[in-house]
Image (cartoon, rainbow, N blue to C red; front, side, top):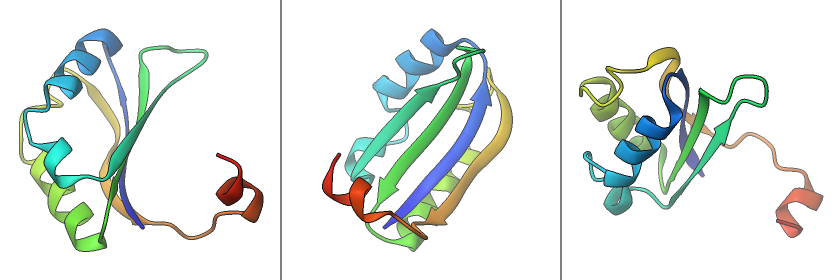
Length: 95
């Protein structure tokens, strides 16, 4: 499994609207996603988007970085291609 992960801060509601509008075609390229909000700072957004291959994740991360989709956010960790390194058995069998 491969992912793009990133951490941003800004207007969560505006970010979510744009994310749902999918201006870069995430829904066609990705297998799924997870959005998390900071407990102490609900405008802090943690994004994880899943891809079939590391190359697909790398390509989409570059597409995001070269676009204007994050221009209204403070990027703390830029979209970065990653691979799953470990998943404990109990998490794998109990979603």
